[in-house]
Length: 269
Image (cartoon, rainbow, N blue to C red; front, side):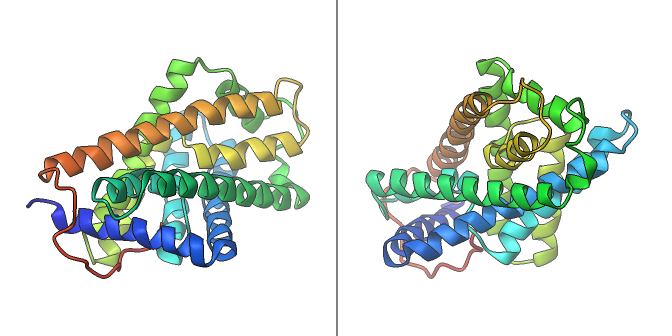
């Protein structure tokens, strides 16, 4: 049925990730750290160019610059939490993995992304952070403050919209073997979420770490980080699991098992 091949690939990928975590937990965690850092490179880039941009074109420029993040994740290979919100539930729905394995993998990859994000942020701040965190009233600190103080409903809604787009990028990448096409869909979907001001949990990990390690105002706090990441992670989970995994599973007929065991060939993301 429609989309069955893509769903089977992703369901088998979910099983492969569980096997990797069990057989090589250190390697899996390192891969998760890599994804946190790769997304962090995108955050660093958009704030370096965005801080110097004319406000009238700031969102446009920042959105057009963030594609490097998911491009690195997909083409280099790494373990990104927001992608896991889609294909781990597909594995559970197709019965290639269990609910316990799903939650374990989610937890480990989220923590790995956080460690990688914070590590990259520390290196960036040690390198001077392009002067972006010297002034406590800088553009970066202002953005962080706004994120830490947004209402819960806004954070969850923006996070749902964000990961809907991110998972669509990964979904479309899985449906084509053309590398140029993959790069194009990644660019446009990430452009949409950054320019629209949506919330990505892993991207926020690097952003908050840079702000906190710099000359931050008193309004930037660990409590604020935790508040934002809690609700943004929840929103990312809802859209990746419900809109994408359950949505396409139901759209393709709602079968519980793959038609056949096919080899996992999709990129690690």
